[in-house]
Length: 66
Image (tube, rainbow, N blue to C red; front, side, top):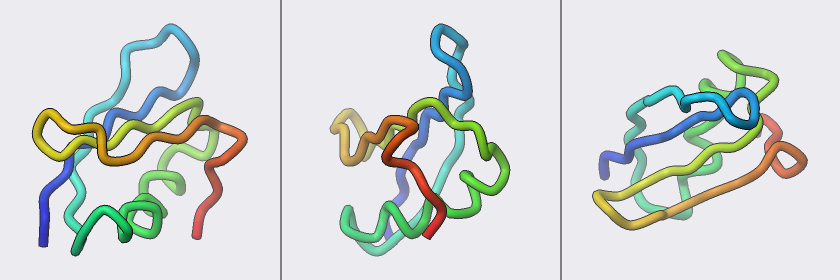
């Protein structure tokens, strides 16, 4: 399992919330975000980092729980 840092922006211009997820690889990130999308159903943007590399990013229209 790899550890990833997630920045979750609820509204444009707000400071993002910081969360940690673990998943097998980059391809598993969207499914691992389901609990975060349940916690914040009105997410504006999510960015997921593997150290300093942006591994995944999505804006509100493309974010739906799996």
